[in-house]
Image 1 (cartoon, one colour):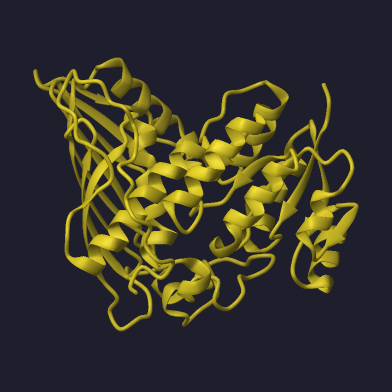
Image 2 (cartoon, rainbow, N blue to C red; image 1 turned 90 degrees about the horizontal axis):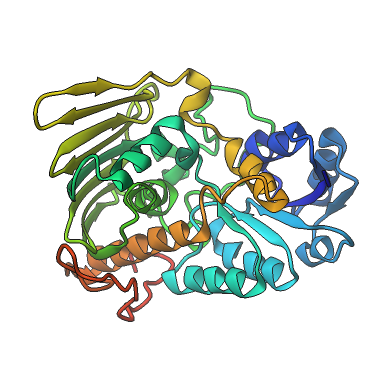
Length: 375
């Protein structure tokens, strides 16, 4: 079995916490290069994690001979340019969320990856849990019947990050190798926005991951609570089959309180997932209740699985568990939500189709929102 030679662009907090350890753990992968804007930081990370090369320039990393794949874990404002350059130079790409600033940019990357026959994987650990995979199988098998409604509540105590009060992603709960730069989460020009870009990007992609359905319309309201960024979000989403989605999200919760509740309502059964607690239950309309085995703590948020899957996909050992198209649908929801919150209007992305109609999956030319979605 060959060895996949991998470079990491944006070797910072998340790369050193999740992606680089995953590369090191894979028997058929080699970390050959890391990139950071600071020379001393790049050299320290290369030395500590065993990479042969340390760069400050992305182009120099991409020019390395025999480099087959790159993981992009930089700030969102540079995702598009860096991923495009990597795909154009023939590299497979694992890209952090949020995918880009706009749906148009995300669509361009998906099309470019297909044209160049390169893998584009989104870093969404929720797509790799045993419960998520089983929930998707049940939905696609028809066990729930036609999906009519989905309710999502997602919270994670990161509001101080979004407000620029604290740069630590864990609010001091655990030690990290390196902390994010000031502005990485709280500057809209760098992060795109607050909760909508940072956390709703997960939940938005998860909707299509579970159902296979794309978003058709979005109505949204944001509350910045005195911050430059949105801290509270509520979205009403209509999927292309007419299913209704209620999505509420905030980072303003106590440090020990996290919620990620997903309720999927079908014509035959309902599915209840508690993602942060690792539980899942299905209840059918004749009253039969199925409790699935709870996930172990390390299985709840498998942060290394996107990179491990990325390498296996390149080796031909696995299917792409989180393809770029899921990042695109996430960006369609984010972009439409930002525009809706700005204008007060319902934003249409594509047509809603009745049950049994053919779904084209084509956009109706929705106008891109500005990177700062509160403009």
